[in-house]
Length: 200
Image (cartoon, rainbow, N blue to C red; front, side, top):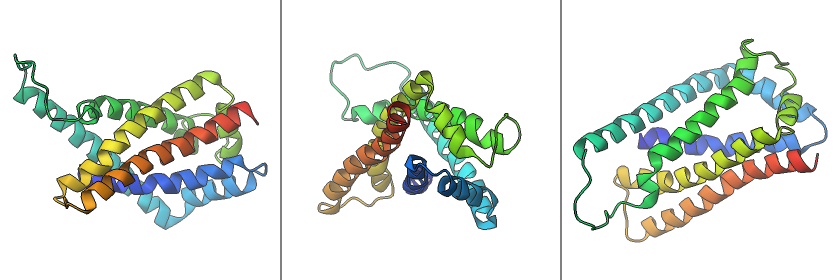
């Protein structure tokens, strides 16, 4: 799950960089990038790998959470707090929110490309701009990216710990990077949504 999570963490900045093209007044660059992502053979292979990684990450997360629940079906009677962080305790729920958003995202974009949903696959610029004019879509979008920030913060640092890469010097550095990443990436996506919703 840690390796799959790190793979997804590396993918998000790429996705954000493409989405930033939505802020341009000319739709050409975003539509060309979307077309390239949908048609270039290497990208199509990467897309399959991405889907498999998402499935592996989600499946492992659910399985581990079920194992945790089964290992301790009844809460401890003492009032002592677990050393587990709050982020860790709610990972399954923040992950579920992110997964819900992914399904919505696939419905609004990927399914159009497959011809399962009405829309122009050669003009995702207009599709995105029209979606961001819907207040309810923005509320869901922004809420999910806040939860993604919490998810990323714990995921980033715990992935390195899971892989046994703890170090007295580098672990604090990784924790700082985790905070920066968990704030910067969701903030970037959120900023695009707010600009398109309120100022375009």
